[in-house]
Image 1 (cartoon, rainbow, N blue to C red):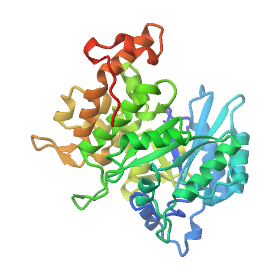
Image 2 (image 1 turned 135 degrees about the horizontal axis):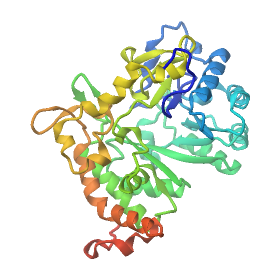
Image 3 (image 1 turned 180 degrees about the horizontal axis):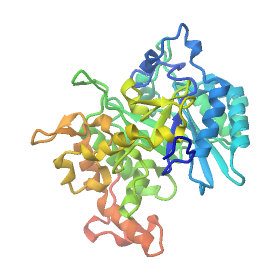
Image 4 (image 1 turned 120 degrees about the vertical axis):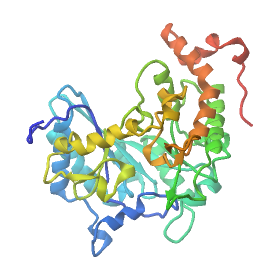
Length: 404
């Protein structure tokens, strides 16, 4: 690649953090809040993406996508991105329209805790076609276990108020649920709740906190994670195939049909999902925002050059190259590929480092779901839909049992 080349070698995605780690709540398990310490600012108010950085980022991100890309998607996260205010996002949309290629569609997703969403916000999000991910960990007791405000108060009621504002305005939304030790035993209950509040696309994210060689008390246990996924699966397959979409299940069905993983954590290699901070600093991954994983700054070096540079190439390839033999010889390799490198904190049975903390749970879940996944894939290949899976199930596994 030449130093001034604008287009990256392959598609990539960037999580944009216009306000850095600054947030209006204080979730106990948040891995990003302490990233504030990376920057020696006199006040927290300095964590704001300046207009010149915003324009450079928007322009470079659009230019870096393949010339054949009919659509380019921006993802806004934090911290809490709505703290930037509506004018920032109006400006972002204005710049996207300015720099988009002729005929190119620009999309936006916004991950939020929902606390600041009101009718004005929702009108903008609806009119500009934003997809909003709202973070909610289940019914009120589960949600308020760790998602507290700065005064230690639960946030559930205020989040639900924001959700209702979105529903009134017709904003498209999905849900992101963090699975931890507290709600990890209640997969069916969490799924039913998310379904009741109108979620039709669900992301389930396990918490694995590892520091100084120890796992936190909030970390979901391996078998607990397996039971959680299995309980959600049993609820979903009983009634909701083709009606509700669970990110993990969609990915697994795609892999069963021969497509690559749509989630970086279960892809063969990674490195194409990066994170940009408020000042233009580009990091290898949202889970690796550390000095050693700083690739550079987009105001000094072009985004496409940093994305395709040798440091990021090594980072992505390491996901595969550091995979233990225990994983490489596993029957479920193509569905897992060791999971997220940030979760590879255990040793294999033969003492090799690099085993995912959640390995046992994933194996439980894969064993439970494989017959139905293969049946769904067969149904689709023969011109049907995933809902027709039961016609292709092995006779002894054709019955579906709902989780208690």
